[in-house]
Every structure is written in structure tokens, then in C-alpha cells.
Length: 434
Ligand SMILES: *Cc1c(COP(=O)(O)O)cnc(C)c1O
Image (cartoon, rainbow, N blue to C red):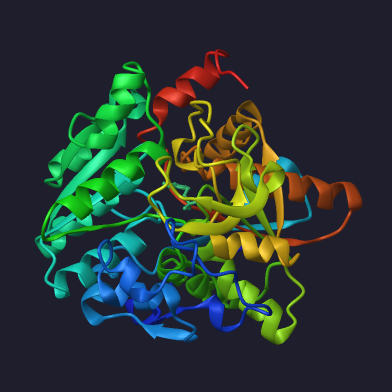
């Protein structure tokens, strides 16, 4: 008899609330500090850049926050996202482990990012905002926000890291198709961008610089707010629909994971799949291990320091207590553009500090080896970022085989790789570095 491999939910199973892990943290987090006064930031400090309702979510200790109906209606276009058992991958690895994955690549933008983009666009719209400014690295966030803004009739301006703007034109095309205005960052459009260009005209850009430009644009343009696709508490919150659905789907499968794995750049898809399981670990004593996977070239958790640092390069954001490589860290241009960020979400950093999660890193060629193995067994061509989670899941399955023990592995497949095919070409041609 064949093993069931797809666990699909109904529209009525879309979660009605987001889960706020801050309500269950065993120790409170260190507060963000104002960049000027170095005092804890208050709600008013954040109002120039975010609408009040999102600032309230950012600071909330409420356990469950209701998902507005218009947001759930849009979620229904691709949620509940499917969860699969990777039976052909298990066979290829000849492992006793059961490997499950939750697939977020079914969204229109191809990743988990619309889960928060839609929520953020909605709250800005009902707050009377006309336009959002943001930054994007490889383009997944810019594309997701462009789509969400279009759905709510907001204008959208995106500062896209220059190296990606020139090397990865197709996500820029998606942003254009969804009506956004895209600048290569550093740009001539902001004082900070002009300053960087004056000092180094060939600067390839970084996420930190692009964030500085988007914030400057926001505070100097009336009717505009800023939007961030990862790192912040309210972004982690919005992504928890992933893990809540996954718990229902694992119940359908009749097992619970012994280990939950997610790739981690700023930490949002990892938070999304894992926080509902962290809740079970904290409140029900579920014996689950939770593992974040990052690139060895941008290892904020595994090699960074836990301290207050800025979220951007220019030092305009609040100081956040997080694992960081330093806000002026220039990550090498790996293909997993979405994992090139100097810091890690304060909530994820806090869990790591408390020993509630583990972290590992892997180099790029090992990531693509896992990605190709996955594509050849499961069919889906995974995003390079997501392939970090696949690498760790395969390693867990091989460890189970070596020990001769069954174990249930769940990983988050945060997106598809259909706009990253040049990276696959490079791997297959044997020219990939690292
Ligand atoms: C952006 C992105 C990531 C990394 O961001 P997180 O906030 O760490 O989730 C991972 N996977 C995909 C597919 C992405 O687009």
C-alpha cells in the first residue's frame, strides 16, 4: 500500500488568528532602543515610519491576534498551503526517517513573504496611507509587497540592492507588472544614496543601505510609510499561519515532528513554521528540536555576537538586541540573496540565547547539491534560500539512517526557485563558488 504524501486543508482551515510567541516567552526580550537617546523606544517614536496598529502588534504581549477578514480572503487565493511527505526523497536516501515539508512556494510571488505583505498593506490602507516604501535584496520581498499594494490600491516604491537589480532582472519585472516603482540602491533618489555613491561610485549595494534609503524616503514624503519584510516582531507574527496549518496537517498524517527545520535570513519563514511548535514545546512539553539553517558566508546566529545593533547601515533604525555580524557587514554575493542580512530577528535571537532552538550553517555548493537531489525526487525546484532547510533535513535523515532510528522531520520549503535558474546553471556547470 502506498503512503499518503499530500496533506491538504480546506479554506475553512485558514487560521483565524496569528500566534504571538511574546505571550509565552519564558523571559522577556530586551527592548529596542532609540538610536539617538539610547532609551527604550515608545509607540510614538515609531509612528513616523509605521501605522499605529502595526506598532501595537510590534509591542503586543497578547497571545492571539485576529486576522482581519479582508486579509484572510486574500490568503485564501493560495492558503492553506500544502504539506507533503517526501516519500521519493526518503527512498532515495534509504532512510528510516519520515520527511515532511510545508510548501510556501504556491503564493503568487512564489514564497512565504506575501503572508506579511498582504497584512501590512491592509493595515496601512485602513490607516489612510497612500504609499509604501521598502527595500529588497534579490527581489522576493519587493515583489510580494508590490503585489499586496496593488491589491489594496497603494503606491509602492522599492529600493532594490544594485547587484541584484542588474543580475536578477526578472523580479524587477514582476514588481513592474504589479505596478511598483523600482530604484537600484544606492540611488540618486535619496541623500544617503547620493552620499554612498559619492564615496564609492561602484558600490554594489546591500540590504542595510537599501533600508536606509527606504526609511529616508518614508520620513521625507508625506502620506508614505515604511514596510519591512522580516526581522520585526509583527512580521514573525504574521508568518505564524504557516506553523499553525502545519500542526493540523501533521495531525492528519498521524505523527508529530521530532525536529522542525527552517532556513533563516532575517528569520521570518523560520519563525512562521517554528513558533507554533515552540509554543507546544513551552506549554505542552512537546519534545521537539528546532533548527535554523543559515549560509556559512552570512552566519549571524552561528558566528555573530548577541548585542544591540542597527537594522540598517546608516544607523537610522532602532537598536535591536540580536545576533549580528555588524551593521556594516558586506555579505558576499551568494545566490541565496534572501539570506544576506547582517542580523537575526530579535525574537529568533532570543530563542537561540535561551537554548530553545539550535542553529547550523552550510556552504553554497552543499546547499545546491541538496536542492538538486530534492528537485530530482520531489519535482519542485526549490529556492536557494529554502534549500538550506533541505540540506539540514537530508543531514537529519542520514543521521537517522546511521543510527538506525526512525525520526520525523518537518522542514519549511519557503519558496520555489523558478527565478533562480541561473544559479542552478552555475551549479550544474561546476562554476559555483563556496
Ligand atoms: C526572503 C526569503 C527567505 C529569507 O527571509 P526570512 O525572513 O529569513 O524568511 C527565505 N526563503 C525565501 C524563499 C525567501 O524569499
